[in-house]
Length: 256
Image (cartoon, rainbow, N blue to C red; front, side, top):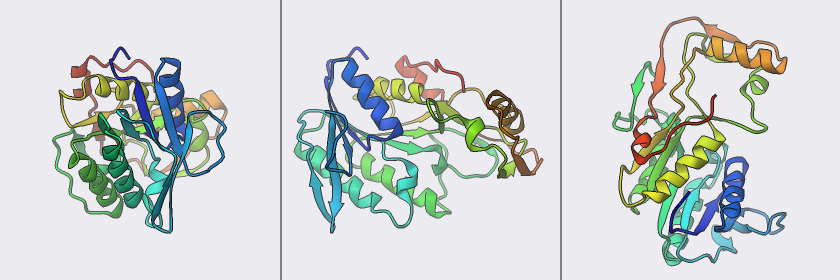
């Protein structure tokens, strides 16, 4: 995190965004992290919400980098995520943002078997793809950067717990695309440090891709959970490559 930048606004200080705020603050950065409430449990928290399509916010940090870490579940059909993102991009511009980073998802890629990189075509054949892709385009049009994150794990988010005993709508032989929370945070700082160079889009995916059967068997054993079941055992790997970001000097440090 050795960089001349020392100001950060995190849009969506939830599980990922809050951890990012805390780490930046400990490193001496001036930080503001947003949530919808006017009540704050941390001194860096600020309200940022739309009320009757009008922005209500407490963000006033000028000359900062912005990171949108709003979780994917907030991007469902009933949410106002596109309007929130548009409002954030507009406010960031008003506050002379040094750069805007969107935490997107590898869900933007097709679900068909294959190997996917940042240059892969995106078909936008389902609603989730379309929403993710449209959000990315909003940010890229404003000269921002996009990080396509794999499935997240880390503190209080263990795969063995959230799949235990469930039937998964996938093949046991499909491979996992996962990444640890701390690696994502490190990747964000790497992009900030190299904001004016490199690619506009990076995948953030751990290079390990075990089958889901092997992965969840290990995770469930670690946490005493019941092994999930799968709808098939068909061999059809969908693998997302996360190696391009290593050109920035970043490396994956945490196992999945």
